[in-house]
Amino acid sequence: MGKRAKMIAKIKELMEKYDRIRNIGICAHIDHGKTTLSDNLLAGAGMISKELAGEQLALDFDEEEAQRGITIFAANVSMVHTYEGNEYLINLIDTPGHVDFGGDVTRAMRAIDGAIVVVCAVEGVMPQTETVLRQALRERVKPVLFINKVDRLINELKLTPEELQSRFIKIINDINNLIRKMAPEEFKDKWLVRVEDGSVAFGSAYNNWAISVPFMKKSGITFKDIIKYCEEDRQDELAEKAPLHEVVLDMVIKHLPSPPEAQKYRIPHLWKGDLNSEAGKAMLNCDPNGPLAGVITKIIVDKHAGAVSVCRLFSGRIKQGDEVYMVNNQQKAKIQQVSVFMGPERIPVDSISAGNICALVGLKEASAGETICSPDKIIEPFEAITHISEPVITVA
Ligand code: GDP
Image 1 (tube, helix red, strand yellow):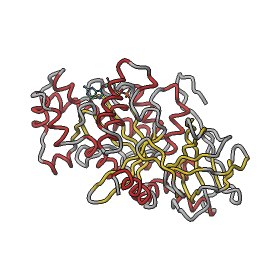
Image 2: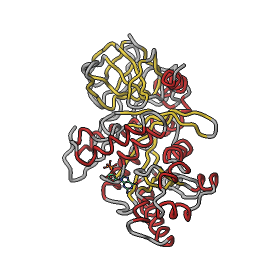
Image 3: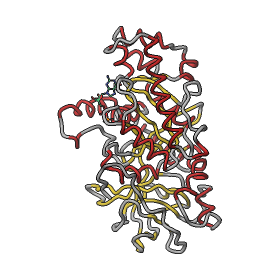
Image 4: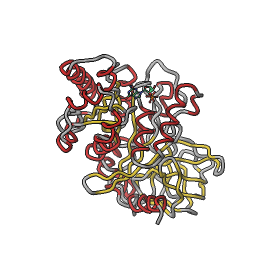
């Protein structure tokens, strides 16, 4: 079997093991490194060529926005990562970073269970960091922290180890203060990020390296080493010893919840139907054999397939040819194609089950925010989408 065929087979296998799935997003203030991180995670996990990621990033400087990184306009990209001997499927949903896309951010947050909050080490926590973190916490999306652009603290600002440390402590404290302030009551303490347990990582997305306390213990690499690699202009060697994707995706798998874990506390918040009903129980348990329930988070337009709906499935299973019901539209539609993502690409599959992010062709009248279910078992729609009242114009 070729590499591509093997990867397709692996994704098909993993999408049936819902505890091996992580649905995540990356949240950041503009320019803090979201695009660079997404592209380099994808390249590191072997889902796009490293050269392509580099090329896309190079375009960042002088081409139109539309040609930015490969992941930026993909509604979802998926990657496979091995952690402690087990393989995991990570779906990375694009969460728009600009405040005036408030509605889109909320919709994307609905589909994810965890978020990597990226903070630039030079600028620290900025207003938009607070806005996106608030959006995430409101949707009961658990955060981990990635402190980016550490290379700049060393090479440009020439901070001493003590100054570096106090800079990191300040960022971590700022984030934790926001979590304390904005997280749902039951998670105010549980969701704080901690250096010791590896829910905080540091690095340089651009130079492709990262470090966390668990990775330091495992690899023997110290902060002193990091400073040396940066000062001696040997960040490419550091990227081999402490690869960005390994450290960050290990953090994602260890600290962000699987769909069955997250749905237990997210469904009561996201869905106001009867939790003791058949559909309610199935969603709480992420049951692939329960009634169909899913939310469309985004519509993408494909050259060949036309409108493609990106959907998070909370229970049940969808297969090609199925008839589904769109609750807000009060319309039935026939599913023409069901796909999963491999990198930025869509791979048609026979069926897809609860906990996954899938792409559906056939829902012509669907719009983002739509609830889908089986025509025989119509469910309450997911709560109406509301926007955070910031001084922004929301595009609903
Ligand atoms: P986004 O707006 O959050 O998507 O940010 P980008 O990924 O586009 O990054 C903004 C700028 O910061 C780009 O010029 C990147 O090349 C640069 N950048 C991103 N990560 C790093 C890093 O770790 N170190 C340095 N020195 N520059 C970085």
